[in-house]
Length: 435
Ligand code: LLP
Image (cartoon, rainbow, N blue to C red; front, side, top):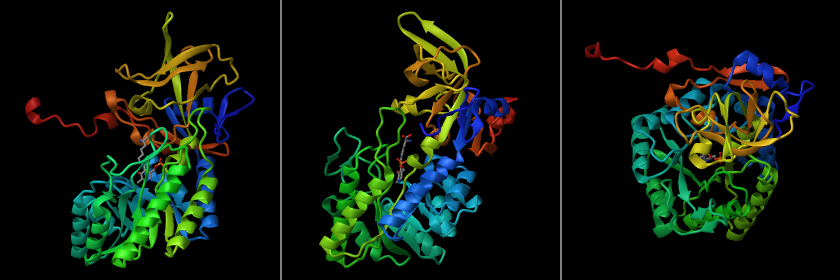
């Protein structure tokens, strides 16, 4: 992993900070985010988009991957926009001072209150998922005397999650409108008759943690053919194409993600080629990487408690966090890599399973990893936890959420305070009649 460096004490170093010192200062579990790496990833995307689309494009950070006020500041200073999927993410970005004219609002079931918030704040785009929502947006915008700029989430019929990705007809997904039976065309036609919305774009997102280029190229092709069809059959000109996110990252050595720059270059060729073929104007191109901006920039530090060797079966090493701060193994059996942060060069002498502290057998962080011998008090760093860890954390078992620190050039700053027990009971109410 890029975040992985050793210092003279043989400790893990991240963002110029000694992991053991971070633990002494902030405790465990601890989420650590490397600011330099986040910025580097933002720049790779931004520079490539500028280069291959001559500035006729935009990168959005899909903030569901990691949403906190400080991250919106960083992403803004790198010149990216953002994608938000809830009123909570929108509010967080707003309070961080993020420019609302660079915000895209997604979601398959936006509430009335969320639509109102998005329209009040004048977000750049509301990405419409369904007809019910479209009508609500038109009505609410009308009530507020505004015109909402919208795009449509389309199902391009590509399932990138199968081993060899497949192009099916109707995909079994709760998101968006299908191309089949003119469904997508019909909703766009209908939208063009509404007074309080302005139809700007179409959007697709074919999945997450994808390693192949081909499904992305195919998605671009399908979407541009659709844009051409819309123009031919209705005269409506779609000015913007949002190709979503989904670029895979290296969680473990066996993972082999595509270079983001070469992805953008290849897709831009497909995009330009089809536009020429179909004689349509090159749309403004948007992309929405989430995981690939923050995942590799994060590590989580844990302290080892118990080591339990079950003879001829497995060795469980229990740490002081688990599925409450990283539910991804429990949910998706996602693989992770880890190192012994306080003795980085120790030989990997045994195979261990790193388990969490939740009262649940499925609370595992890493199953069967080659690792040094550890004892209570050792510090384990789980790598590449910057995406979908803090943002998916919970208070299961009433465990307070760990703090998040941002590290850069040897300095560490708290960006999310750790919770304490008072936070845990903050919203609890004992009705009077319970005494
Ligand atoms: N755009 C849209 C419309 C999305 O739905 C998503 C992710 C993204 C962009 C960003 O995708 P990324 O570049 O991060 O792959 N919790 C799961 C991931 C769920 C992703 C949902 N949508 C996980 O931990 O793997």
